Length: 627
Image (tube, rainbow, N blue to C red; front, side, top):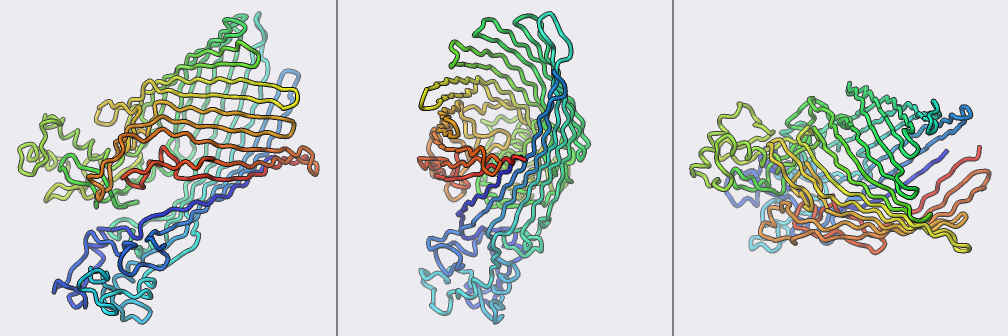
């Protein structure tokens, strides 16, 4: 039996308040009688941030420099029970059962929308008679500022917020039972044939709990015109059976034939995937191999929920709409389910060799091609508008070079006419809502879909050198590297794009993709001691993402620089501690405290490529009972 428990904390620094354009326009009202209203009539805000963390009176929980700091806590536990046994002289078996759980919680501060509106009406605070001043005169730098009159009291500002410490936001559970038997089936002139048979059951559960004030429509940062968030509880039960057959065809040639059948109970999906492989030991120190197979990936639990255009909406901060030439900042981006989602499939071919010129030295090289079909991805906001733009160009016969987004131009008028000809309704494909007066994007709806074909060619290299010593233990050096010679994708527009060596910052189809990734690892073993040091390298990528609207004009670095992260760990095994085995481990990740490169984009860094965490220390205890 093995048990593992992990606790981790992370700290997220963000701006003091977001601007929710929908709530500003449809939920808030400032009367003419407001004592600081300079317009002489009732008004509503639009692109307004209630607090900026710099000027005026800010919430007490903000740091001195205006940051809102949110502390996340992660709790993970995993327990595994194993059993290995002999069935006969030539048959063995094993079974295992594992249970895992991961919980995530966060400190939450919520600006309560009804309290904000009450304060704008002069009915705020505990006393119910205080005014909140949303205008520039609340800033001491304003010429209209008057201390004690136009400023906002700290008491009033703090009254408008609710704080909740370590609210649980998600919980994930996984149970797996697997059993397998292997043994000889029949003899051939070149040796016995062998077979492996197995069964597996997986039961996954994913639960997410939204902010209760968002559910009630009382959170400023959750649009009241959209569907409120709701607690979700999705399950994914899978039964699988697999078989693998190996038979020698000659003294130095063997073949493998394998198949796996899976039944996804909750999604009503059945699939069978095959694999065929050949291995030829051309020389005692050289083996050649080739294989072909198929793989299958079912949608995540809950992906096939009903479509809702007003689900999971948030503000867009960056991006450009090529059809109008306008910024996407200030529009909404929503996420929904897709009841028509299909599984993604892939075909994998591999050729390679392993060379062992010395007993302690080995080198493996593989060339692999992977073709994905019906790749499950969610289009980004920029993906969506660019896809609609491509469809417009194709329908009108206009080239991208000739298109002029200026209102009144011939090409813009043709684009407007094409938009007007689309099927009536709030959304036009691919899930875009536009303002009928100026065609600007109001909302994009993103949902997981089978949106792409992806073609990958890569070379994998692995080298291992083992150095045994008499008194200092054993040292093992391992070098692995992957180099992508091709990484192309075909999106819904039918256009083929090259993702290799690019940030792919605006794409939800492919990730940032360094051409080269490598890992160098040194392991040391001596009796109950073991230690390792690893260096993980990734090549630079060319930047191509959108910027925040307020950073437009700020030019980013041409590339996201190459990075090498070094990790180290040490373990000691107590092999007879109260009739049990206990492994004590400690280590440090990102030993030299490498930081992600700063970029003028959402989040300030490319977290899909570089870790936002600095140096991290960790300890773990693994216990294997002796009973």
